[in-house]
Amino acid sequence: MTAVKDPMGRAVADYFEKGKALRLEVHSPMFDDDEIPVPYLFRDYSGMSKLEQRAIELSQGRILDVGAGAGCHALVLQGLNYDVNAIDISPLCVETMSKRGVRNVRCADFFSLSGTVYDTILMLMNGIGIVGKIGNLSLFFNKLDEVLAPGGQVLFDSSDICYVYEDDDGMIDLTGVEGYYGEIVYKMKYGNVEGDYFPWLYIDFPTLKDYACANGYDAELIANGEHYDYLARLIRRNKG
Image (cartoon, rainbow, N blue to C red; front, side, top):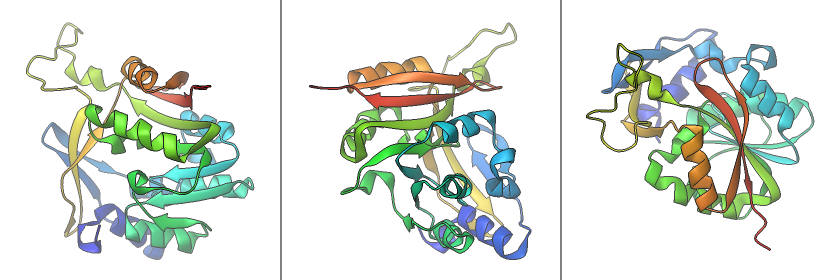
C-alpha cells in the first residue's frame, strides 16, 4: 500500500499531527455511505467497547495485534507490560504507531508472516474481516497453524449482519444474495486520497464454528455485544 492509496493511514497521521482530521468515508455498493470517526481510532481503554475490554483482559503471553491501526489496543497491552507486536498494511498507520510509542510495530500482511509464534493473536474491530471471503478461511487456519504457539489463542470480534436483510415482517430474506451474505466489498476515501475496493468478511458465529471445527480448531463464544456483534476465541485442538 502506498500513501496515495492509504486513506485510513492519512487520516490517522493527520489526527495525530494536527489534532483534527477530515471525514474518513466508507463506501460500498451494497450499503449506504458511512464514515469512521477518526478520533475513535485513538481511544483509550475507557473508550473501548465491553468486547474489546474483555479481549484485553483475556490476552496473555506474547501478543500479536493484527490490523493495529493507530495502536490503541497495542498501547494498552504494552502499558500492562505485555510483549506486544503490532502489524498493519498501512505504512502511515505504522509510522504513527511508532511515533505514539508502540515499541514493536511493522508494516506487514498477516498472511505473509512467518518465523515467530504468538500466545495471543488479537484481531479486533472485526479483524477477521481480512479473510475477505468465506472460501479463504482454510488459508486463514493454515496460517494460524504456523504462527500460533501451542496452547495459544485467537481473540476476535465480528458481527452477524443478517439483520441487514430483514424484511418488513422481521424475516431474513436472502433472495438475490450471491455467496455468503457476510462477504462485503468496501473502499475508503479521505479528502483526495482514495483507496481501492477490498473484500471484507463478517461471519456469524455458528458458521465460524463449523469452519473452525473442519480445520482442527475449537471456537468459543465469549460474549455477545449490543448489536449482533460478538467476541470469540479460537484454540487449536491437540492433535496428539
